[in-house]
Image (cartoon, rainbow, N blue to C red; front, side):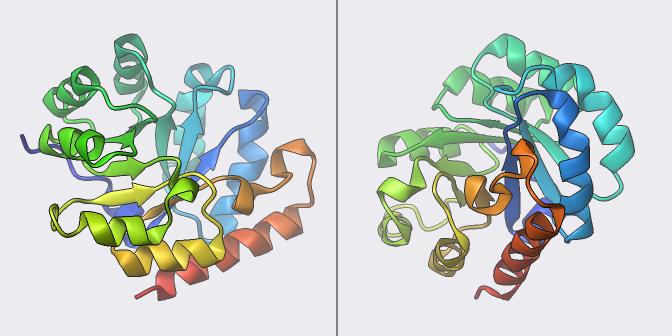
Length: 212
Protein backbone atom coordinates (compact mmCIF):
# COMPACT_ATOMS: atom_id res chain seq x y z
CA UNK A 1 0.00 0.00 0.00
CA UNK A 2 1.05 3.59 -0.59
CA UNK A 3 0.51 5.95 2.32
CA UNK A 4 0.55 9.72 2.62
CA UNK A 5 3.98 11.33 2.74
CA UNK A 6 5.08 13.29 5.76
CA UNK A 7 4.53 17.06 5.43
CA UNK A 8 7.05 18.70 3.12
CA UNK A 9 8.18 21.14 5.79
CA UNK A 10 8.94 18.27 8.19
CA UNK A 11 10.90 16.38 5.56
CA UNK A 12 12.83 19.48 4.54
CA UNK A 13 13.87 20.23 8.12
CA UNK A 14 14.80 16.58 8.80
CA UNK A 15 13.96 17.14 12.47
CA UNK A 16 10.94 16.40 14.67
CA UNK A 17 10.89 17.65 18.26
CA UNK A 18 8.96 15.40 20.65
CA UNK A 19 7.24 17.57 23.26
CA UNK A 20 6.24 15.88 26.52
CA UNK A 21 4.88 18.32 29.07
CA UNK A 22 3.23 17.86 32.44
CA UNK A 23 0.14 19.56 31.03
CA UNK A 24 -0.94 20.92 27.66
CA UNK A 25 -1.09 24.48 29.02
CA UNK A 26 2.71 24.41 29.10
CA UNK A 27 3.12 23.85 25.34
CA UNK A 28 2.72 27.38 23.96
CA UNK A 29 5.75 29.18 25.45
CA UNK A 30 8.04 26.31 24.44
CA UNK A 31 6.60 26.18 20.92
CA UNK A 32 7.17 29.93 20.63
CA UNK A 33 10.86 29.49 21.38
CA UNK A 34 11.23 26.44 19.14
CA UNK A 35 9.67 28.28 16.21
CA UNK A 36 11.95 31.29 16.79
CA UNK A 37 14.96 28.96 16.69
CA UNK A 38 13.97 27.48 13.33
CA UNK A 39 12.24 24.27 14.39
CA UNK A 40 9.57 23.36 11.85
CA UNK A 41 7.94 20.17 13.19
CA UNK A 42 6.75 19.25 16.69
CA UNK A 43 5.10 16.04 17.89
CA UNK A 44 2.71 16.73 20.77
CA UNK A 45 2.36 13.57 22.83
CA UNK A 46 -0.74 12.01 24.34
CA UNK A 47 1.16 11.35 27.55
CA UNK A 48 0.58 15.07 28.14
CA UNK A 49 -2.94 15.53 29.57
CA UNK A 50 -5.12 17.86 27.50
CA UNK A 51 -3.25 17.55 24.20
CA UNK A 52 -6.39 16.92 22.16
CA UNK A 53 -8.31 19.72 23.89
CA UNK A 54 -5.58 22.29 23.18
CA UNK A 55 -4.64 21.10 19.72
CA UNK A 56 -6.93 23.30 17.62
CA UNK A 57 -5.79 26.46 19.42
CA UNK A 58 -2.13 25.49 19.08
CA UNK A 59 -2.50 24.74 15.40
CA UNK A 60 -4.25 28.08 14.85
CA UNK A 61 -1.47 29.90 16.67
CA UNK A 62 1.55 28.05 15.32
CA UNK A 63 0.38 26.52 12.05
CA UNK A 64 2.19 29.08 9.91
CA UNK A 65 5.51 28.19 11.55
CA UNK A 66 5.21 24.56 12.64
CA UNK A 67 3.89 21.23 11.44
CA UNK A 68 2.08 19.86 14.50
CA UNK A 69 1.68 16.11 14.82
CA UNK A 70 0.25 13.96 17.57
CA UNK A 71 2.36 11.21 19.10
CA UNK A 72 2.06 8.25 21.45
CA UNK A 73 -1.05 7.16 19.54
CA UNK A 74 -1.69 3.55 20.55
CA UNK A 75 -5.42 2.92 20.02
CA UNK A 76 -7.88 3.27 17.13
CA UNK A 77 -9.90 5.78 19.18
CA UNK A 78 -6.84 8.00 19.64
CA UNK A 79 -6.09 7.82 15.93
CA UNK A 80 -9.65 8.84 15.06
CA UNK A 81 -9.43 11.80 17.44
CA UNK A 82 -6.11 12.86 15.92
CA UNK A 83 -7.71 12.82 12.49
CA UNK A 84 -10.68 14.83 13.78
CA UNK A 85 -8.62 17.59 15.40
CA UNK A 86 -6.45 18.05 12.31
CA UNK A 87 -3.07 16.60 13.22
CA UNK A 88 -0.65 16.93 10.33
CA UNK A 89 0.82 13.52 11.09
CA UNK A 90 0.60 10.87 13.80
CA UNK A 91 3.32 8.87 15.51
CA UNK A 92 2.94 5.63 17.43
CA UNK A 93 5.58 3.74 19.42
CA UNK A 94 4.12 0.40 18.36
CA UNK A 95 3.77 -1.79 15.31
CA UNK A 96 0.04 -2.02 14.54
CA UNK A 97 -1.34 -3.02 11.16
CA UNK A 98 -4.77 -1.71 12.16
CA UNK A 99 -3.46 1.77 12.92
CA UNK A 100 -1.41 1.96 9.72
CA UNK A 101 -4.28 0.73 7.55
CA UNK A 102 -6.74 3.22 9.04
CA UNK A 103 -4.28 6.11 8.69
CA UNK A 104 -3.59 5.21 5.05
CA UNK A 105 -7.32 5.05 4.34
CA UNK A 106 -7.81 8.46 5.92
CA UNK A 107 -4.87 10.05 4.10
CA UNK A 108 -3.13 10.68 7.42
CA UNK A 109 0.68 10.44 7.46
CA UNK A 110 1.74 7.92 10.10
CA UNK A 111 5.09 6.94 11.58
CA UNK A 112 4.82 3.67 13.52
CA UNK A 113 7.54 2.45 15.84
CA UNK A 114 9.45 -0.78 15.78
CA UNK A 115 12.88 -2.22 16.39
CA UNK A 116 13.22 -5.52 14.56
CA UNK A 117 13.46 -5.83 10.78
CA UNK A 118 10.16 -7.72 10.79
CA UNK A 119 8.33 -4.96 12.67
CA UNK A 120 9.79 -2.15 10.60
CA UNK A 121 9.16 -3.81 7.26
CA UNK A 122 5.61 -4.80 8.22
CA UNK A 123 4.68 -1.17 8.85
CA UNK A 124 6.56 0.12 5.81
CA UNK A 125 4.97 -2.39 3.45
CA UNK A 126 1.53 -1.56 4.90
CA UNK A 127 1.90 2.05 3.77
CA UNK A 128 3.55 3.92 6.64
CA UNK A 129 4.96 7.34 5.72
CA UNK A 130 8.17 6.35 7.51
CA UNK A 131 9.05 3.94 10.30
CA UNK A 132 10.44 4.93 13.67
CA UNK A 133 13.38 2.94 15.01
CA UNK A 134 12.63 2.99 18.72
CA UNK A 135 14.46 3.03 21.04
CA UNK A 136 17.19 4.16 18.66
CA UNK A 137 19.74 4.51 21.42
CA UNK A 138 19.80 0.75 21.84
CA UNK A 139 21.07 0.09 18.31
CA UNK A 140 22.85 3.12 16.81
CA UNK A 141 23.17 4.43 13.24
CA UNK A 142 24.98 1.32 12.03
CA UNK A 143 21.71 -0.54 12.42
CA UNK A 144 20.14 1.57 9.69
CA UNK A 145 23.07 0.85 7.41
CA UNK A 146 22.42 -2.86 7.93
CA UNK A 147 18.69 -2.45 7.21
CA UNK A 148 19.50 -0.75 3.92
CA UNK A 149 20.77 -4.09 2.58
CA UNK A 150 17.43 -5.92 2.44
CA UNK A 151 15.29 -2.75 2.52
CA UNK A 152 17.04 -0.14 0.36
CA UNK A 153 14.03 2.17 0.06
CA UNK A 154 12.72 2.15 3.63
CA UNK A 155 12.21 5.62 5.16
CA UNK A 156 13.46 5.71 8.74
CA UNK A 157 13.14 8.19 11.60
CA UNK A 158 15.18 7.19 14.66
CA UNK A 159 13.77 8.15 18.06
CA UNK A 160 14.94 7.77 21.64
CA UNK A 161 18.22 9.12 22.99
CA UNK A 162 19.23 10.98 19.82
CA UNK A 163 21.57 13.87 20.67
CA UNK A 164 23.10 16.37 18.23
CA UNK A 165 26.08 14.17 17.39
CA UNK A 166 23.80 11.17 16.97
CA UNK A 167 21.44 13.16 14.75
CA UNK A 168 24.24 13.88 12.31
CA UNK A 169 25.29 10.21 12.30
CA UNK A 170 21.74 8.91 11.76
CA UNK A 171 21.13 11.33 8.90
CA UNK A 172 24.46 10.38 7.33
CA UNK A 173 23.38 6.73 7.56
CA UNK A 174 20.26 7.52 5.54
CA UNK A 175 17.51 8.55 7.99
CA UNK A 176 14.93 10.88 6.43
CA UNK A 177 14.66 12.78 9.72
CA UNK A 178 15.47 12.40 13.39
CA UNK A 179 13.05 12.53 16.32
CA UNK A 180 14.50 14.36 19.33
CA UNK A 181 13.20 15.00 22.82
CA UNK A 182 15.21 15.42 25.99
CA UNK A 183 18.62 16.26 24.45
CA UNK A 184 17.02 19.31 22.81
CA UNK A 185 14.26 20.28 25.25
CA UNK A 186 16.24 19.73 28.43
CA UNK A 187 14.38 21.43 31.29
CA UNK A 188 12.18 23.58 29.05
CA UNK A 189 8.96 22.20 30.53
CA UNK A 190 10.27 22.59 34.07
CA UNK A 191 10.86 26.32 33.99
CA UNK A 192 14.20 26.20 32.19
CA UNK A 193 15.89 29.16 30.58
CA UNK A 194 14.41 30.08 27.19
CA UNK A 195 17.73 31.33 25.87
CA UNK A 196 19.26 27.94 26.58
CA UNK A 197 16.39 26.19 24.81
CA UNK A 198 16.75 28.49 21.82
CA UNK A 199 20.46 27.77 21.61
CA UNK A 200 19.98 23.99 21.81
CA UNK A 201 17.21 24.08 19.21
CA UNK A 202 19.27 26.24 16.85
CA UNK A 203 22.18 23.80 17.16
CA UNK A 204 19.98 20.86 16.16
CA UNK A 205 18.56 22.88 13.25
CA UNK A 206 22.08 23.59 12.02
CA UNK A 207 23.19 19.97 12.47
CA UNK A 208 20.22 18.61 10.54
CA UNK A 209 20.55 21.20 7.78
CA UNK A 210 24.23 20.44 7.35
CA UNK A 211 24.14 16.65 7.61
CA UNK A 212 25.08 14.84 4.41
